[in-house]
Length: 67
Image (cartoon, rainbow, N blue to C red):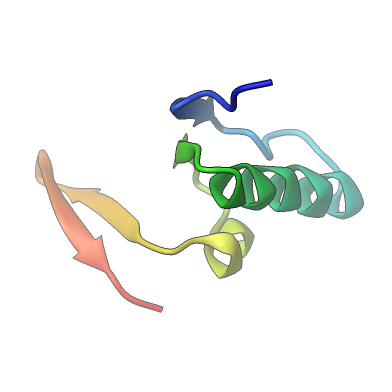
């Protein structure tokens, strides 16, 4: 089975307990290992440890975020 090229997730960890949030984040991370680009919109700072790159929105502009 071919992996999708792009996965878009809007608040994938929203309204979830911490254990489920971790499983969802790990699943997204595994998908990238299969060659899928994952784009996730989230307000959950705990998701950051799973990211290769993080962008933030400020005054209507995307900005690279670190850490």
